[in-house]
Length: 91
Image (cartoon, rainbow, N blue to C red):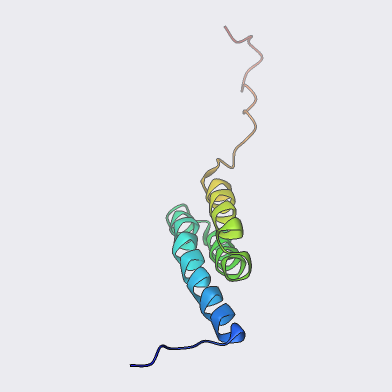
């Protein structure tokens, strides 16, 4: 049986494909967070960035993209405290 030989272009294509699959798997985390937190758009952007970034630069982009988009989806949207309804001082 002869050993299988790859050209440089084929080897790069296989590496990019494997990294894109890893990025897609990591991108499922913000997608599922976005689906369950009613922020599907951020989840879809997160899976796209993790997949494309994973194909280009591997885990150096897909892991930070997963962390950042999961944080963006999971953070609370009501950042300001509500004003008191009456004029009485708070104790």
